[in-house]
View 1 (tube, rainbow, N blue to C red):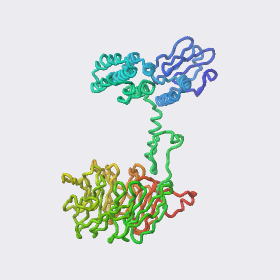
View 2 (view 1 turned 180 degrees about the horizontal axis):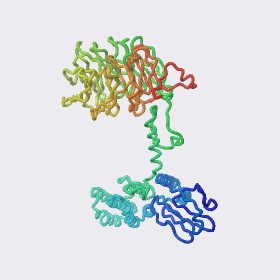
View 3 (view 1 turned 60 degrees about the vertical axis):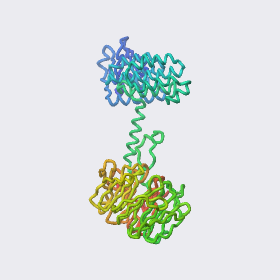
View 4 (view 1 turned 45 degrees about the horizontal axis):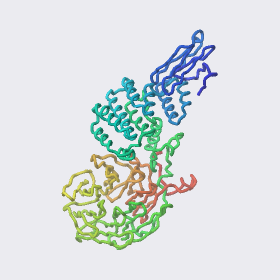
Length: 602
């Protein structure tokens, strides 16, 4: 930035208000006070009362005019940037710097009428602020906005009178100024009730208002500014808003971003683009769990993320404890006796209980107390049943179970049958958050919703191929389907539309369980018959990582719901692999790992 005095006539100077200061001429620039800017030359006033973004040139008289090169006019975007910087500096209290910036650029931070209006609002001079609205009326796109702005002003005036104990003055504002506006009568009735407040603290509590002072008036100004065009008065903290939007957009486009979004700009650098390395992503083998002695068919982290349950063809369920610091898994206990093997597991909402189901020829269901390791219930309605899937009701007191032989039951924790639905050949189940509806995929290549209270059902999803398994996002909006010969499909349950088909995975007629995962469930992971684990960003059809290491079909993947960088996969090779970020090795060692992830984004 060039200071006044010695730098006259430099070609590099860019300004909206260009003052020639050559020879004997003198140019004095009046204080703008974030408002009007006045430049005088030889006693003549130039540029007073310019609108926002208006540019003029002030030149000296005589032969100096011919010798002066024409200055470049600022573009609209350049003027906008100067105003944004000025507003930000003003918010930091650098008022003299703002004055110099506006003086040298010739731009104006805001319209003079807006400056007066701002000052009168902050000083609580409500009558003057109301008069300022009449000046602003001609600059506004919507004349009706004046009534809304006046209402907000008078509401603040009314509340401040009440806080000061000036009840008669407040009553006069309510009856003589607010009511005649004939705007928002419901709010006026609410305001009238505040007359009964016995003291200021009672008033602030009932109104959820900060009280008279700078904070509440700043909040009032923020609301008032929404009705004014940005050419008149910039929206509050506009530069911060734009920077925050840019940071959020970069994060949204980052394929590997897997941490909580911090809306504060203090947590990021604005000097570099946001980028997350895949080495921070859970695609490196942290542990290989080999305690099962046969195919591992299922794995599932508990809802609190502290445990992992794995079920195997070897007839056991193993509960693993997750170390909160190292994220290493340690065997906690083994639950035995599942004669047909364990092909599905479901944690109760509070993680106290775990239900285990077997394959198609299994008619039994086991309900275990996880803290004690005791079997609470072993349920079997008929030896001809097939109970292969289960889902907990959100109340944790009931569950539904079923299979492909036409059984569909709702039971309590003791295995007592509460309700049943005849003739539904169930492949997979999920309980909706309303506590009444159960989603069930069946042998007709569809997912239907069943209401056990009013015994109604409706079609939600229809596929062209068998739905081998499905899972639902935490918010209940999206369903992730593993479809035979097709792979992984994402459906919107509310709009009942197919959102995306994910590519890469090999899916035949084996039951493979995929999952949502990562922070905000931005990612999707699935096993595959080609021995790999595939990971996609939810918005991208192509995988961002392929995890190698298993030697046979990967049956199930589970992403830790609390630790975004922790994932587990179960395979027919008899192992469970625990995946996490790259270990603290040098780059060559990391790139040389056998069990790493292929970068699908290059």
